[in-house]
Length: 64
Length: 399
Image (cartoon, rainbow over all chains, first blue to last red; front, side, top):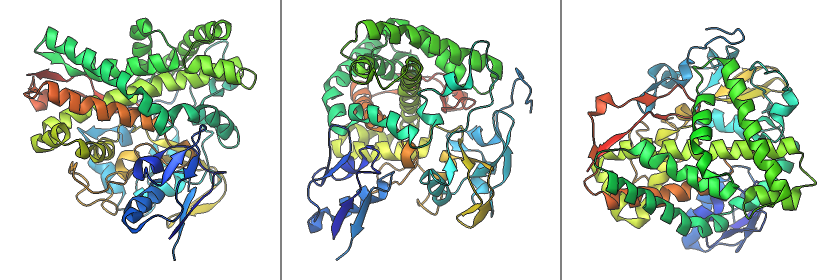
């Protein structure tokens, strides 16, 4: 599973950081920064929640 | 319903509540195909969207659905539509909206808000001390729920807290849809005049607050009217919403003592409980307006260019397609998907702040007053649904 983040459409809501703090961060303008684009198995649920809660559609998962 | 200038509108059906829940008619609309025709608080016809998936679809697509819906309020003398819209993020579409929002988002990162938490805790403790010293009994709304987020947003934004009676009273009346449109338009203008003075002061001597930051770092990118619009929105949105979450949330938890005990005693239960309270209470309930830009479908429902859609966040948040037993408060849900902060590019900018305030305030309140109880029978508590943000007029408590 690989995380893809589109910073052009990110709106900086921060939902992903709250859902999966070890995987996502925000830069000074609040835009998403992916700390680890291949999360470990025990982070899978958190990451899926983060993607589902992203309001702008900036986050997606590529399975595999 | 009156639609004439200065008329007193009746409260639209979709804003009416049966205490915490939307009224049965609004809840039932989820099960009917299509989108029923309603009238907005301004008397204009619209189509009501209540299903979670449909609401998310509309909110998530700023290209098909425009947000630039200016409320048809009569304009007081000396005001133009442009004045009213300047800096008002909630009346803008991309790319204009994106430009304005990006000037602000850095102030509301999760990390920035975490740095405010010690100050939020102090403000919460000060108000709990004052409540303990003066009571019991107390009105939790005026002693705690309203002043805590008001003081937090004042300090953050750079608004003198000494002016609170003035701006709190004005915000409450301005958001009251049962008041004449003329009065609400005039109040909005007064609010902008008040903020105009603060903006002018900040331009001469920018402080160490958000207004000061906007002047220092973006003084050349923002007009005076835009600064006023942005700051007015943040001031109102910053206190009315969280205040009503704290008041209604306390009442809901007092009615569910086992759940209240979890919030008080289990730090890891707090964050999921707040999400469930956001879902269950859905305080922003005026109906989010969007205009259809061209003929399309939402879910399975065709909509036409020019249609005004009104999205009911409380109805969407109680959609059984998304949440089991949606009319029950259950703070132990593993995940409670909701659109209480909206969705899409207009998702609440202050969500991290609102969450942080609640995460500090609820446990501290229940810890300080372990015997907290209603000071009046539940049936006598007055809900106040005729405002853009659902809430309580007062919450008498004792301990």
